[in-house]
Length: 280
Image (cartoon, rainbow, N blue to C red):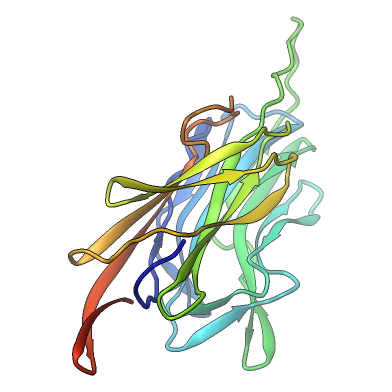
């Protein structure tokens, strides 16, 4: 997306994923290693059986003074301890990303619980600090889920496979002094390939740009970008919304997780003899 201003962006605001029922939640905050945990949700069927799936989402915000780099190997992830005591890593996301103070990342992943008994699921991360790898505490706000074998005497029809488009993260990059690229990550978290779709960019309630996304296989994630948008900061802040499959051309497994929101504050700064508008 082309912008006619210099910009720095912060304060990513996630949208709660509406999927089945909320099994555990922690709205926060809790700070470890200068990372603040908020908006932690584990969602799924309240009567989950062996082979059932739960969805995990949470937000981490860096509240330190300068910056921190997420470990390029482990990244941000969820951990799950099975009834046997084995710990599994669920999706390594945002690997190698550097966060400035007050910048955030959002995790969204899912795990299939394939054993009967008690499972523990918690949010985690690994960062590089003073040249050393530091990882999140074990069983940090762990969610306890009891999985059982569900017996049935009737024949069940398997759910129809469907795609599910989800926008997990957005960032901005200066292409020139007056030209900004508005990038975002979109992933098919469903179990069926998606067709081509169109993503919509909305600023303060006004649609301003569209981006065509190619077909995505199950689990496939790609970076997309809005370019060529003539947009200037207004008032004290702008509300940015990115809507996957905005015109509902794709039948998805979850139709309520398509919107990603972010709020940006505006300040005015004088450079030379001209008044320009910046974002911080």
